Length: 67
Image (cartoon, rainbow, N blue to C red; front, side):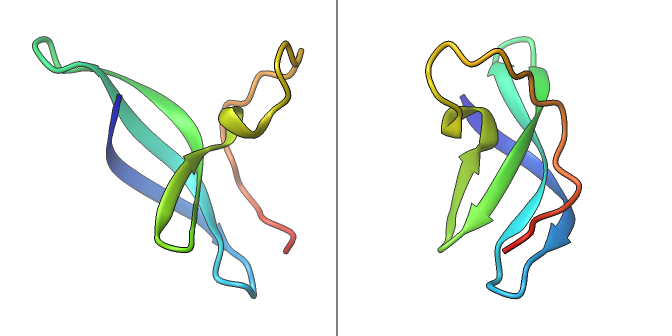
């Protein structure tokens, strides 16, 4: 999946940015999903990738970052 537009919501004192990333799921049809994301040290990380395996949590958005 390739990340497309990103919409920042908050930035921490350490320079971490959280918000929404529009992630393309099918280049042919241009389908996409919106995922909560973190930008730090020059790289995007989808926040759901940071959850433990089989986590019951569902992440929809990221509005704030604590540190």
